[in-house]
Length: 173
Image 1 (cartoon, rainbow, N blue to C red):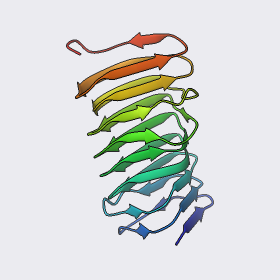
Image 2: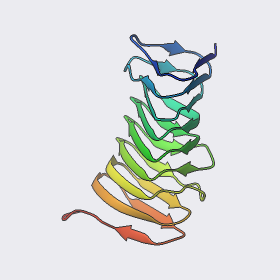
Image 3: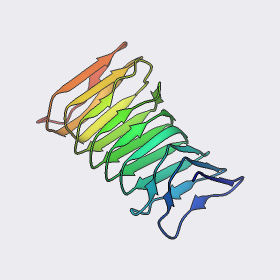
């Protein structure tokens, strides 16, 4: 079934893994920390906080909407993003990273994926992107962005932006 957890002024965290067959909605006044590597989310995950969100899934992790100052999403399988609004976004996937939602708005984006990365919605708004690991990668940005790192790409890279594209790559990349 579905799960809805709300902590008006505090945190939501866990001491053991959780399995949710349906949709999960988490709302907290401060932080959400659901980082047990045994977590299983069968439906879309929605999270809204003032501070930080950290969610780990044992398989695929799909979000409907995530909002917080800092967001960390980790999945042993694929990560599929809905709408994400944050200052700092870190994505780690044992598979692919893609999006189903209309926009990702973030200052800094860090990507670590073993598979393909497709973040190609025209209303995405990235500031700085660091690609630590990725297969074929496609990034589309609505304003302007800086590519700060593209360390271990195992495929092609395509970046499209409507504004300036800055390259701030370390030597050798």
